[in-house]
Image 1 (cartoon, rainbow, N blue to C red):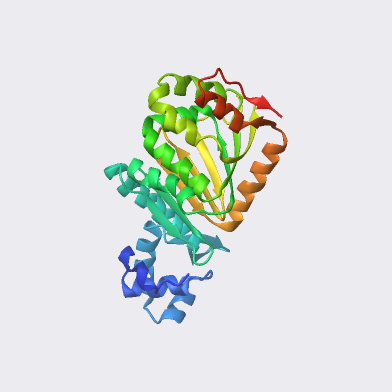
Image 2: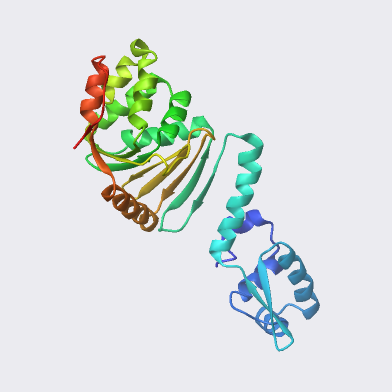
Length: 281
């Protein structure tokens, strides 16, 4: 941990506190800290109390002697993210938080529809010639329809086709009945949205309703994983190759246990006003 990094000035640390944190990058007792920093024993002891209270230093005891060590970068990041989420997210209800991990990626919390919808739309508008994996229970689909207009849904699906994206979808078995009930409730208003959902490059599988029975969906593309709760209007965006690889493998294992569905035929029949039924391949 580089405790002298200029971005850490936001923590409000004094030069003395910063010097002590730098000294205890590895485990040290008070005597060793004094020797490393040149700060008086009284000054070290005084600062240690404050740094421990702020959660920047951990204390252990060996043979009756106290040893001190600064928290790891991951612990500091988690503390800052939790604080930002509390101060910004819960007070304003409009802004999320972002954490960068050097060159390993970043983690973004989107709060509010004005942040969640653009993050969702970027899946289709900022990608090209790739396969996009998605897990969606119809509960999440129903919540999505409450939050996004048919026009924006059509725009999303038009971008999918324009950018030659393959939607590799995994849905619950009742999802198609939910599609039909929702869309046929107002066929005129939903006609454009229905048509946009057909003729996409699609590879769909279904799973039993009891699994993934939440108001949440997950999208996996390139090195990014986006988990969205439309009901809570919050999304977590993980731009990290290692974690996204894990979710991709989890998706592929889940798909192997599912049943193939002719998604495009179902949507074409629905657009034609027919009583549609998904065709199992």
